[in-house]
Amino acid sequence: MTQMPKEYYELLEELQEVDFVICDLTLYLDTHPDDYDAVEQYNQFIKKRKSLKKQFEKQFGPLTNFGYSYSNYPWDWKDAPWPWQV
Image (cartoon, rainbow, N blue to C red; front, side):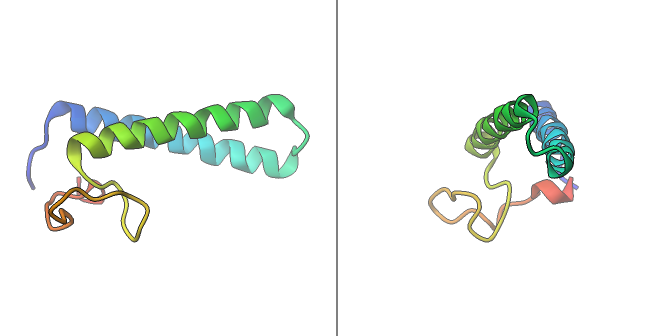
């Protein structure tokens, strides 16, 4: 396996943490849809995730596949490791 820079792993871990919070808030909001503070917190984490994803992809390439991430030119999907491989 290719060793990536320390920042790669730090950003990837931060994205995973934010994804966990988003998932947890989603489950909570399924049973508490009128909790204004939880909806606000959910939206803040969605915004944070978009920012982290953009930062990660700018530095290290696509994070997800099938149209959810931009690609550099030339097409760089052949470049590994992909986030799910580390």
